[in-house]
Length: 504
Image 1 (cartoon, rainbow, N blue to C red):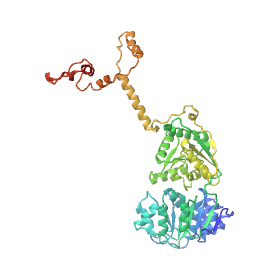
Image 2: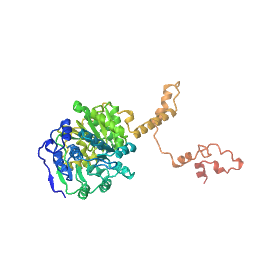
Image 3: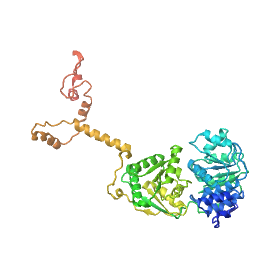
């Protein structure tokens, strides 16, 4: 049960929220003076030691809403070896790394220590940090439990536990791990629980593990920001097997049409394999693009994200691993190359643009097979997605200006095409050639005769005779007799099928 719900927190300044002087100084250094609604509503109760249930759409500043009070509360006390004082759980490596960056930024000047436990990093290095003792442990659920099961970590000293992007945890199947981690921490801990949506399973978890939390809901669930211009571009391919190629052409046309207004963008695909194909296609056409998905090495993923943040990478082609919680400022465009199969993911994807009061554009490319997903999205957000013109020339019956690179074509189509070409060439090479020295009339006559001769189906007996002609018989009706069996070969063996039928 929650004892209060706040939907519109009053306008306050950070200095009015009882944060420590060092934290206020760090916040001022970032240039922020006024907290966002989720920060204004959550920081006060958190500093009072209350459990907090924060519900807010992506891009509203949830990370600072728990990082700032946590740093203030941990300013007193000392960490012990293998027993972290606070725990932050994040669903993905990228989000966990981002929380760690925010902690470093806001904890500047304090003596608090942290450790980041994520996959793709050596266990040994992480064990060394834990052994020295950390005030803040930031982790993904799987790697945290790996360390615990290896006996390298104790959670009995956790005073504050934060669960970030809980609905994403649900989507990724982490809820059993979250429940187990809750049970490994003291029941006296303070819990700060944040989510963009409140699915029934999320509500069950909060009812079970949060104690009389303060609920802060700063926006209606599953709404999209008014600063984002949404456009749905529909396309019906002439054939299903070329729809994927057509969508790549539409994507390039949208980028070209917006020109300089499209400073950068995140392009979302539903499948990891499509992320690689789309990124390769864009690079083949001269666009600065890089892929990011869960199968890539962690160092590659972080390097790609850093390149997108500093502008050395213009387009980030991503799976939904980049859709939740990542704070990438100044993203001008989001492109849904694939319509998300889960309606909630649409809200999180397009929330990568139009952040912090800035405007953004979100394009969604849809084919007829996506109609049910589009309907689900529009039902979720409570409004239709505005339809936009398809800018690709090929969609208007005109040829595409730039052909797809050869390595970008579907392999099945290429194999069939080359196979048919070789077959035709072989047939032409095997055909009898006319004598070049013969008169023209003699060369043309057989061709004309063949063209005028009507095709007729061979009798069944003739086809049967020819199909068995290689089994020791002559190819024609009156050919030579079978050789090699001496003088005692019965006469019927040497007969053709027609001769045997007449003889009978």
